[in-house]
Every structure is written in C-alpha cells, then in structure tokens.
Image (cartoon, rainbow, N blue to C red; front, side):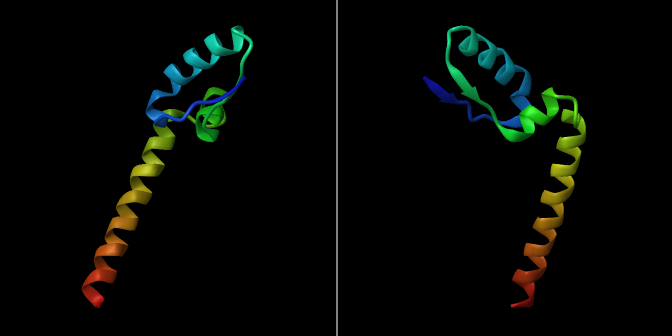
Length: 70
C-alpha cells in the first residue's frame, strides 16, 4: 500500500520514525518534500524554520500595508 504522511515539518524526526516502521512493513511511503531535504542534510530544521518565520512576517506586513492602502 502507498501511504502519504502529512505533518508539520517540526515533526520531521517523528515522520522519519513512522516512515521507517511502515517501510519495514512493506508499504511505500511518501513524506513531505522539506522533511526529505532535512533528513538528507540539504537544509537544517533550524534554518528552514528561520526562513519560514522571516517570510511569514514579511507576508503579514505586506498584507497589513495592502489592507491599509485600500
């Protein structure tokens, strides 16, 4: 069976744990793209969360400015 795990990237270690269990049981498992990148060492969880926070704050400021301009 193919199983897709959907979860917050903050739970990357748990995603890996569950994925490994399901894979050992013979399932094909898909995990979130960024979780895979974190597990492969391409980006750290800390760096991902820092970038995400920065972009969310930027978007919030932009939305606030757009709202006031109307």
